Image (cartoon, rainbow over all chains, first blue to last red; front, side, top):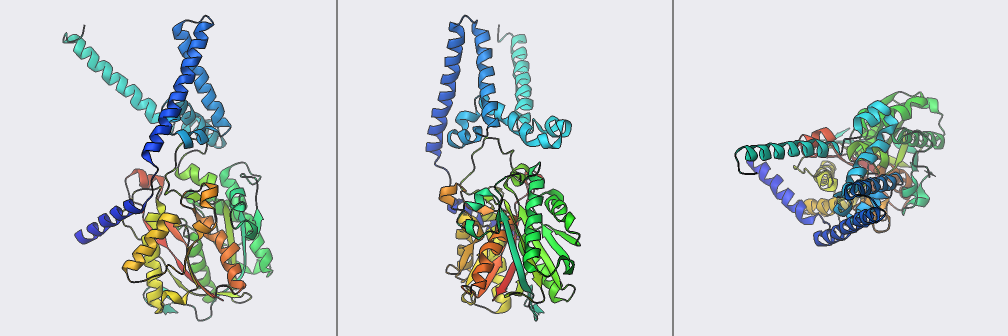
Amino acid sequence: MEEKEKQKKAYQEYVKQVTPTHNIFLSMLRAFFCGGLVCLLGQGLISWFMSSGMEKDAAAAWELLVLVGLAVLLTGFNLFSKLVKFGGAGFLVPITGFANSVAAPAIEYQKEGQVFGIGCKIFTIAGPVILYGIFTSWLLGLIYFILQQCGVLA
Amino acid sequence: MKQGKASIRFEQPPEVVAAASVVGKKEGEGPLGACFDEIEQDPMAGQDNWEAAESELQKRAAETAIRKAAVGKSRIRYIFAGDLLGQGIATSFGMAGLGIPVFGLYGACSTMGESLHLGAMTVAGNCAEYVLCATSSHFGSAEKQFRFPLEYGNQRPLSATWTVTGAGAVVLGRQGGTVRITGATAGKIVDYGIKDSMNMGAAMAPAAADTIYRNLVDFGLEPGYYDKIITGDLGTVGKEILLQLLKDKNMDIEKQHMDCGLEIYDNEKQDTHAGGSGCGCSATVLAAMILPQMEKRKWRRVLFVPTGALLSTVSFNEGQSVPGIAHGISLEY
């Protein structure tokens, strides 16, 4: 039995050696560049909205709306996945990735109906982000509350 | 007749009466483009969804093979068919209209080997004059079932393979063909504990090595007996591992070895990373390339070894490994 486990381990090590991987530095460089591009676009939008007389909060909200709308539109034309193939996390980490992860299942599962298709499966990818995002905010809020009560924070 | 530990030698080898392949656009643009019977340009094949599209491809491949066999549909006694989808729905809905008794099979991407093995035994055992063996896969339905919705943005690792959109079908009979199935070696489930579902070549290579090794030992052959030893969908990574695993057992098949997954696409130009995969990969390459090459007498003896990775999203999420299986079919002119 132990012999077999050893054999399996040796095989997995060997597989690791022969399996080619993407160049991590190149991937990071692309992600950095593309992520920066998305941020630049966002900042450009905010500045533009503010210059046309919007309050800062309103401008930020509109900026998010435009980015989300753009990502959903690109998803619909099947262009977003091509961008991600190049830019990776650069496009996935900003809100554009979140929009794509909701729009893509909506398109795919639409064939299975409005309720059991779109309804049940639209959040299959974004669901964990939403659940654990809210849970983490609650946890941080609790810690903040306790620290406040102890007088550590004002 | 039984041969060795897990093989069969057919005393009256069943013959391949006809074969047909139907593929999608991307496969049609690949190196084998001119060899397929039909290239469907519409990813939905005129249907409403991926699953129905796959069924349609399987149906068309079956109908074309039956028409080419020219023995009359009523003389085909059984169908042995399978696909990758849950509960084998591509097969159920694809074969429903043919009105022939069906055995639905699942052997992941090795299913074409499984269906040929069972079909050949049925014909050789005189349980049927003719049988139809068919499998299919579809990029859209496979991505949806095993990975992500198609429009979702993610980066595929270099070891990932591209599921072939296509279906292949073969009519086997007691006579009427030129290529015969002279023997078969059934596959064992081989698990070396690989947990990366995006590196299926590495998961399946040990199973392919095991089946090829047992075939040669059971029949008392050297690799050189075969003109070609053709695996299903190991891809670049799996091919390298297979050759190494057999070299470790003092068996060198480098000269004979080919992989259907490496034939169907031009990995560089078509951006398919490690190669093609899916039930449809080995089935369409068998129908479009291997059998025609044998009929042209370029290859006399071929060991056809479709390979499968036996995983589901459930077993994967529950932390199970990805076991492999491979079925060996000896084809001779």
